[in-house]
Amino acid sequence: MGEIKKVLVLGTGVLGSQIAYQTAYSGFDVAVYDISDEVIGKARDTTFPALAQTYLSQVKGATQESVDAALARLSYHSDMASAAADIDIAIEAVPEVPKIKEQVFGELNKVAPEQAIFCTNSSTLLPSELAPYTGRPDRFLALHFANRVWQFNTAEVMGTPQTDQAVFDRVVEFAKQIGMVPIPLHKEKSGYVLNSLLVPFLSAAAELAEGGYADPSAVDDVWRIATGAPLGPFQIYDIIGLNTPYNIMIHGDAEQQKLGRWLKENYIDKGYLGLAAGRGFYDYSGK
Image (cartoon, one colour):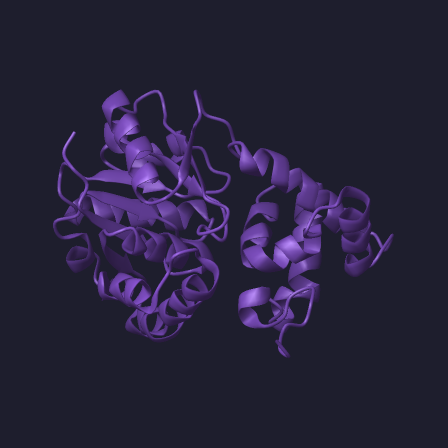
């Protein structure tokens, strides 16, 4: 396998921006793509400078020079062809909506170099569901990150029966190179390891609040006090951002869809999207 030098990250949401910045911080040139000049401009002017300050304050050994150097390794694109020029690997981190992911991979395949590896950061979709739309199923697999990648630095690597083993091994090595702890999965599992544990946990918390059994803050108090965990489930919701759980719920069974509607009507429709928006289940506007 050839050496990975240039990386493309598609999507500048909470996790996409973190993946891109972490990769640039690790010394790689990173092209960042999003759907419009307005969206990519906001990422360039606001999201990434804020991440640089987060790294400066929270990452051991980070200096002003190192966080600025990471920013300098990022390039910003709203045109897919320019974003994909000369890339060795692409990591998709667009909304958790199958049709959007299918469209993005279809467009990417038309303009990306033939040898480039495609990865999805999907939280719940199996890579085999998306592989037909990539045009390169042997060079496609999942590379799934946890939120706050600089702190919770796992990278779950999951291929399909069609994924070339050499490609799988190269992505495992790449994950190490960008400071992650690779977690290879031996076969496909919806939710991978992390979300197979996390999604039921968060859903159980939502059921308690939606059903009127306890307020979100009370649920969080019980979980933290009784288990010693640093965060309760609704604090985790806010860190993730409420749009991602909603997209997962609304495509689930009847009970999950009910929770999704509750989340949308009581929080998302009011602009309460989580920590990044200044308010979710908690108000962060004064911080």
